[in-house]
Length: 186
Image 1 (tube, rainbow, N blue to C red):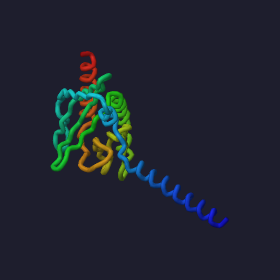
Image 2: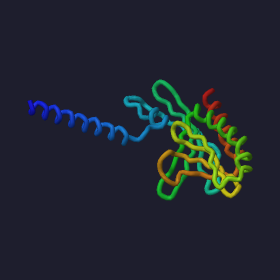
Image 3: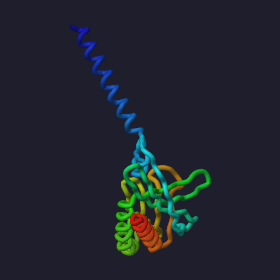
C-alpha cells in the first residue's frame, strides 16, 4: 500500500514539474507583432513594397519613414514604419493601418490634455497611448514643460524619439494615413 502511495506521489510531482516547465517555456517566447504574424506564414510567398515618406523631424536625429505594403498569396496589408538608426542597431516601429487610425485619434486626445496637465504643475507627469504591438506615443511633463516622445518598440534600448511639437506628429501620421489610402486605390 505504501508503495502505491509513493508511486502516486512521484507521478504527481513529475506532472507538476512538467506543467511548470511548459509554462516557463511559453512565457519565454517573445510576443509577435502584427507584422511578425503576417509575414511569418509558412508555405506562402511574401512581397514587400516600400513607399518612402519624408523623414520625421525629431529633437535628436531624423528617422526614416515609409509605408510598407506586405502582400501574400491572398491579401495585402499596409504598415507605417518609422526606423531609427542607432550606432549598433536599428529600431523600427511597424504600425498597422488600423492601429495608425487609433494613434491619430490618441494624439488628438493627448493634445487636448497637455496644457491642462502642464498647468497642474506636477513634479512629473506622463500621459501616453500604447498600441497592441507596444508602439507608444505620449508626453511627459517635468519642470513645467511638456516633451513629446515616441517609443518604437516594446523591448530594447535606444528606441525612443523626442519630438518638439505635437503638430509634427499629427502631420506625420495624417500624411501616412493619406499615403496608405492612395496606395490601396492602386
